[in-house]
Length: 413
Image 1 (cartoon, rainbow, N blue to C red):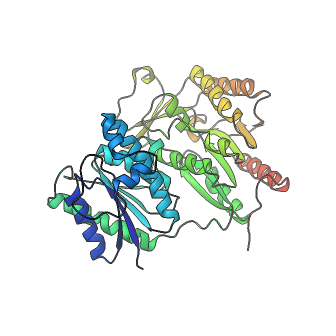
Image 2: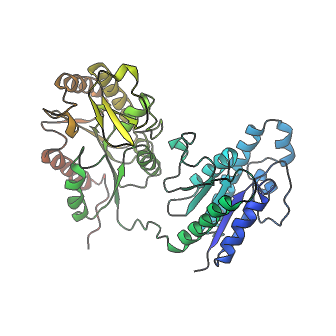
Image 3: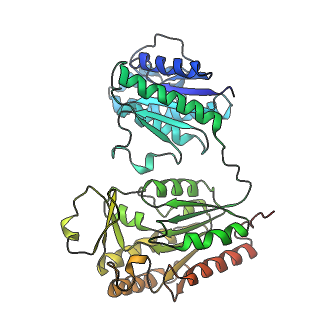
């Protein structure tokens, strides 16, 4: 159970804090590999990977970075060097998990280091800005863990020690307990909101499992879509079933509930076969504490819980969205099938529900057909997305792709 933790930080300014963290990891039986990412100052303790090593990883020197005269530019280069060094050390088998400390500068660098590592490697960031909207979805590794560094900006104190001691136990415990994904069966990446809004995941899951696939369902409320897109772009999935697209709506309309600007592009970039449907793309997600923008105050409204609420789109906005969806799918380098349910795309747009809007749906369908013509393979379905007929069409397409060798056949016992 002996595990080694890569500890990353600016050992010139946070020497005491890093030393305390290292001591805690060692006291719990862990080993430590240290990496200094400071620029200006020197360290008071021996370091395994020096700041000079980090700068050299991207062809720079510390003196050269100082000569830039811009701390942001210098630290961005150090971030690139730290990420490259982190990956190199991991490939050499030098550590089992990473942890980094920082304020905004240290967190910025730590995010790059975490992204450099594959999924399944424990990645912890102890940050004074953990959970802040300063951290965009596109910066997040799919399985990174954050710990808020209460009272940790400068110097050791009881609050700081509480955060750091928990962090030491968390990263070492994770390195001991983690079960990295084996990928011994082909995996399907699916998106959904939940069974109250979109019901297909519960219906598809048993049939896909019986066909010999693992199914990873991502909650499309920002961070879920971010993780999904990153893995899809890496080619982690045998097939993508991206049926919940309101995160694309969110990014196009500036919502904080965002998976990043590259939503609906990852599978296309990697050439992964993808099935796509516009589930829940008629609503905009807003943070529960946000005021509803003035242009949406006359729209149907749904308060999902205290964290998230929704407003509906009008016909003009849905026409523009239809074109954005098709534009992104048309750029895909792999097989793409766009399913267009003609009778609705989420539970709340059914007759009698608050987002029921036949004219808006008709405008969306018409714009989708026009935009897809000759550009994207589209199948119109005479059903609602929550009808069993939708799931049957998805399974039929998967079976056809397997028969044609487009999608890897599942592994059954």
